Length: 198
Ligand code: SF4
Ligand code: SF4
Image (cartoon, rainbow, N blue to C red; front, top):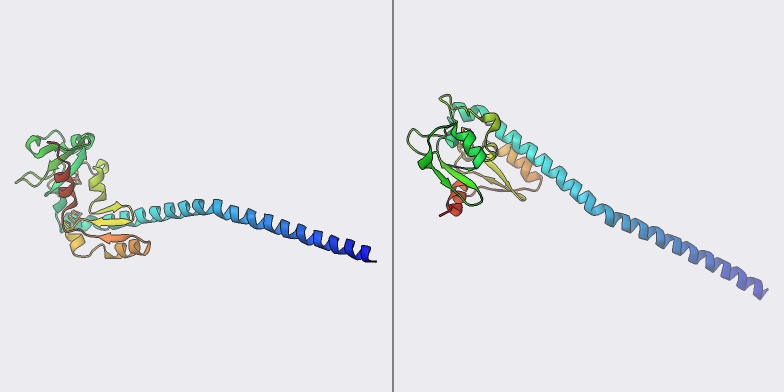
């Protein structure tokens, strides 16, 4: 009888151990899966957030179109500096003479000064429109809102920024986790002065 009891006890014990071992294996598999999935999920999320943020930023820039031409009269195309690649410089110059306004910067970039009297950006026409709009330089595409990691840098030179016209878009970007920064120094001038090749 005792023998039978021991055998039954052993059988139940073996079954319990087997179930525990199966459960542990299952738990380990799930944990490993979560570990594997997590970075994938995280990357997917940040990629999704980045895409959404870029979409909002484009909407913000596009919302200024009419204001830029009719009210601001393309202030950013008439004053300040453009930081350009050699290819962008060629496109923007449109064969015009801006030698004394052009400086070579580090890393193969150029600075074009567009603050001179009667010397706005060579691509700006009399209707305050850009003659190379479809192929305009990267800096012009991004102005007045730039991405820097999880920060949005706004150019204080832009009257639309100063008047808070971008607020609804900035609120959406902030809700996505972006910090909004509006430094008082002009970004392009900072780049210009810190990158000049002597
Ligand atoms: S300074 Fe601002 S509002 Fe004016 S044209 Fe440039 S982006 Fe538009
Ligand atoms: S290239 Fe076009 S958008 Fe850029 S500053 Fe000149 S006129 Fe303005």
